[in-house]
Length: 465
Length: 129
Image (tube, rainbow over all chains, first blue to last red; front, side):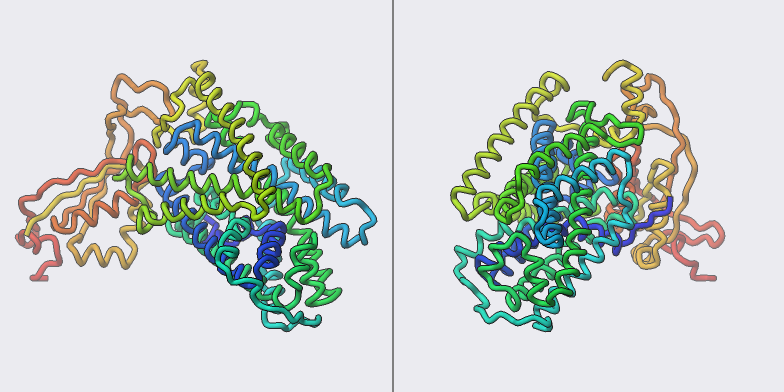
């Protein structure tokens, strides 16, 4: 088969995965708190997440062309228990929080477009129901369509950012200080807020199979996506400085709309509404698709019950889609729409995602020790420097997940309860169902063999599953 | 000058990638500069320690099952073997059983039959042409 995805395609997909409308909430929240010094937090997080991307790229170099990818890397390095807790927490639970956050962003924009005549929950729940039905029909939004939406969003953000940054908007410029504070003790903790702006570059990895020169282009796409996103976010903060009051920015539910209206008036409002609706629909759809894929992949390698890979007549993994839809709708129907509630969901989701990045670093360090002679087409430079800095930086962000002490405790308790539940499930599943040692890694060749459909066919024929 | 023979036995699907890499103008020039002047590829049958068992199978074969493979032979100066091996390892690696093995052995001498030249002269372009 001809490999079609170029470096440009990889970077577009990466940016499409990273970008989401809920990013505006994080961006506005951080910028509102400290002003332009938030740029420092953005750059630090970008560098930290590039280190995480480097670790993922090295894992991909050890186990290239895996469809499941991320779960398999951990299974080969750290064993089934850690894999279940990390993957379920880092990707399934975090996305269960992320999906309603995107729904809320969509609802807020729609409310604005319809002059607040309909409650926001109606829009978010309706969107989720429609997307669940589309996914149940096995209709996947094509990669081309996703790329077009991502491209529209990127071009719009760059345009809106640059217009704002150079003060070329038609609206009235705001006269305000550039830095609300330059105190590092206030700026650094905001890295936790900025983290949300740079997650998801690891989803480029599964594209490796269809990429031209994957050994070079997979890591490069990840780094370029993160770098480009960093530039976009920095420009947006500079734009905010010219057209939105710092205080007001943190208090509105749709800061992107506020910025667009202040800068370009009604034209900006319409422009941003179109972009935001497209992006929210695309992102929530991607989340549903992505969680389905992860659950299917984990069920395939026996880390989740087989029911998760059951498919309906359209070939859609309906159990996961329905489960994901139900959780999302419950949270959305709870009336979530305010910026603060969305921010809570984003931070809770970030917390689990951060945990995953820490585990990737540990996985790389373990495999450097146990498989040090294995040829790697990509090796993280300065080993173990990037991994150690990545772990320390990410743990710092986890500790400072929120500057509001009450919210921080809530997130810690929520995370503790969920992780305890996941650990309980993982221990039970590995010990009694898989009957495997809890922490023993699975050999790389065995993990690779699980990719082959014949692996399951042979075992099924022998009555082994 | 010392010479080594590098023999690579690998699955059929790996050859195109390796050849593509070896034939890149920059790389081939580099290899040529440090001593690689030729390559020989043969179709062979064989098996390794798994006795030809596919990695998805549950039990290993009790009797050897020979599978089609490629054998690639390169003779070069010993000082560049390490670099060549790294390149080959990186190119052939997939993590799957069947990535192959590399055998390295000493070569006492090389003789070009047509001209009678020996050693490095036999590996490089003939001086008398």
